[in-house]
Amino acid sequence: MTDNNTQTTFKASGVDIRGLHKSYGDNEVLKGIDLEVKPGEVVCLIGPSGSGKSTLLRCVNLLEQPNAGIIHVGGFEATDLDVNLDTMRQKVGMVFQQFNLFPHLTVMQNCTVAQTKVLKRSAAQAKETAQKNLTRVGLGDYGDRFPDQLSGGQQQRVAIARALSMDPTLMLFDEPTSALDPETVGEVLAIMRSLAKAGMTMLVVTHEMSFAKEVADRVVFMDGGVVVEEGPAKDVIGNPQQPRTQDFLRRVLDPTHVEIAE
Amino acid sequence: MAMTTRQRARLSKIIQIVIFVGIIVAVVLQVDWKILGENFFAFDKLGPIFPDLITVGLKNTVFYTVISFAFGLTLGLLLALMKMASFAPYRWLATGFIEFFRGVPAILVLIAFGYGVPTAFPGTSWPQPVVVMVSLGLVSAAYIAETLRAGLQAVPKGQIEAARSLGMPAWRAMITIVIPQAFKIVLPPMTNEVILLTKDSSLAFILGASMAQYEMTKIGRDGITSLGAGITPLIVAGALYLVITVPLSLVARKFESRTARTKR
Image (cartoon, each protein chain N blue to C red):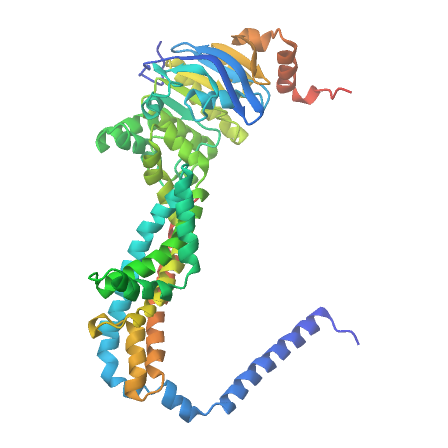
């Protein structure tokens, strides 16, 4: 697969989730999730807020500890108690809704700190990799800036470059455009689109239905802690079978025509 | 006749000026300036203590402050991390330590280490700087621990998540990501702690020891009995404390505004 913007393709790995349960106290957020993402596949998780999709994503790299179930990710069994989570997480890039850039470090340092401290790359090597990825997200000249000198969209692109600098084999996106001003959403989605074309495995929690429809190989609709419907993007979004999916999409795609029932 | 708001404000201002001037005049008239001068401001009689007050006293005050703060900061960081530990006995231990040394007067701790320890363990004899460092360090560690814990917990949780998601172990995320950000948050209260320590170092007068280990307050107190200049030596010592603490506040404030930009 080739792309005009990006020469490199990725060494991709997948995710396999079996029987995943997660509770906070008495509140069961995930009620037995099975989900597979094949290497190089782009899967979008959609659903109403509180449906458990962000929790599911955070379970994949064990930012949340599942109560039951097995997760294979990037060649590791993440739920194995003996697995080295730090080594596993090096292979799993994550992009957060609130960017979570390190405010005391420059854009360049944000992209090099984990390379030098975790991967033990030399400063020159780390900088080269960071520069390559900052250029890829269109911010090659912004290395000396601090995060608070950038717009939200630029910060999120730096966050993507930071994750890519670790050479991950798959990427998790947790509502990457939800905290952005509307005019900067497009630039972030464009970067994600180019990553997808370059063959990156991506698991994306999003409310951007047009992005999901265009980029995702598969869309998974979640509600109430279970997977309600999944399939090719054009089927799930274009022709949903389940009433809950139909109802959700009607609200999201045409918010001005929702009728308040009863 | 009702007054307008502006008239009322002007009247209130005039009354405040009258009271202020009245107090000053009363003080000036009441005070016997001759006696005051002989007992408070007899600078001409300070000759015998003068080089020592600065070359020995000021030097030792700064020295005791620096070593106590270094000890207190190290121990305080350890206690702060213990207070945040998931293993409960660590938290209990840290809480007990903090409550104890925050609640006990520093001078009691100094006496305990200066006189109690050599009595209880015959043969142990710590040099005075070590006694000061340990005693004041233990007390300041209790305060520093609480300040550091608050600072570390003020760094958003997302910062740790981002660091961990890049494969950093917990200790690495703490050192590289959390502590540098917490440092900026704790700088103002930490400056307070150094200023308090500077003043608490005066409590070392209780330990006696030799001239080479005297700090400013001790030299000033001895000056009261030997010089016949009233408390003038202490007035000068007091001014020298300000010479240390005021620039410290100014530097901290400057540093604070310089780093404010990188704070979110």
